[in-house]
Image 1 (cartoon, rainbow, N blue to C red):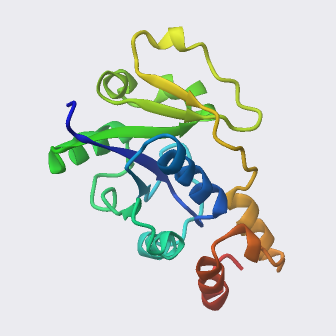
Image 2 (image 1 turned 180 degrees about the horizontal axis):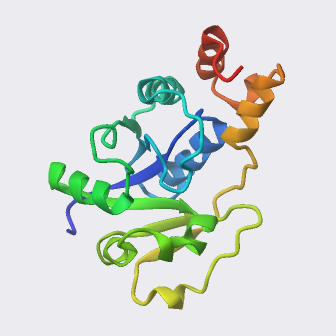
Length: 196
């Protein structure tokens, strides 16, 4: 395990990707020694069954537009062909088999840590993967002793109160949100009339 390259997996629907996602991921590559962050585009979050999503490939395209040529980021469609709903434990098992030379860690928000005990086979995740947890406004970070010997690191990344749902609502109201997203993402969403 020692010589494996550490890849940080950032799961999300990215509906759409925005500057908050990118700034957070960048913090880990530039300030925390992470070599690469993979944006794992989730087809359907088991906890958000009623969410209306753009198609998988449309969201993947937006993530690729957002990443641009930054070499430390990568868009991953690995969950697109896995059984639904997508459970993180299954994706981690699959990705570990597919890339045995890499060590995968998880990036989650403090609010996700609060409910982590509800994740499918969460103990298996904790036994095999490190969790990097970023603070989110209003989220209460649980006592890490409750997770036993799990490798969990709370990271004081800058907090940005931007959400994809806020952006979708703003677009529906015909507001100009160009500064909340990379320029190419904003332009593509506008040209394709997404979220109206």
